[in-house]
Length: 140
Image (cartoon, rainbow, N blue to C red; front, side, top):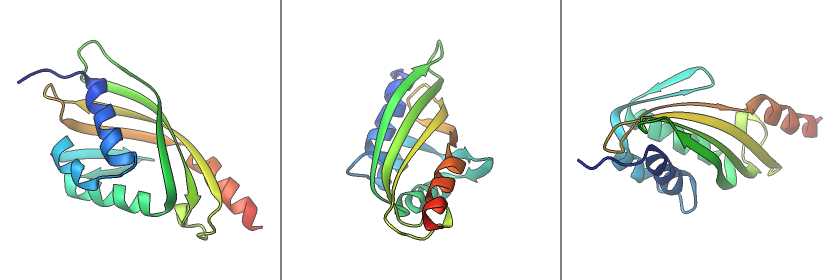
């Protein structure tokens, strides 16, 4: 097997799954069957459940535009950290009314990457509280 850069593997995932046109089926080729996502302290286990999570998250943000701000990897490429932003329009994110309000979110993702480039796990944190507060302040 050829060793890939961890950053290349993560950027390939971002490009296929989160950037337009979004291809959720690419998840099947890019993450392992027992993939683990930890997001906001919640653990999502298995490729299938992760795929459902991605589709659900994407469904509540219309016109989603995802950008990688910066990524870097450890010495052997087995860990990658990315800072990202996403913008779009509210279609019910965080249980709010789907009012079409613009939103901008920033996050950090730390990935575990297998030597062949398959993604093993991801821990992601976003400024969700601040986005929720902005969206609900508009409704008052």
